[in-house]
Length: 70
Image (cartoon, rainbow, N blue to C red):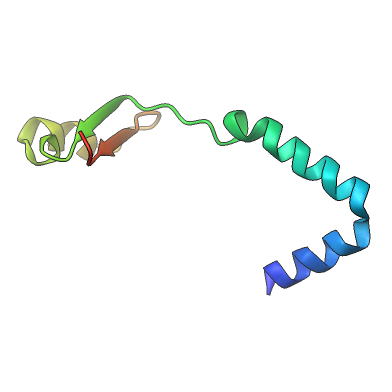
């Protein structure tokens, strides 16, 4: 339902406005959705007790990225 309403609204805005919106999203994509991680953990490391203790505490401001390809 939301997607349907969004496309309806975009259709009413006009081409110039839609282009501006898309350009703004493209310019800010690396800052708006930027994320930083405390530590990257390989898939093998995820099973180590030290790693489980670290990422398991779920502290504010600490994010761990699991990298399966590493």
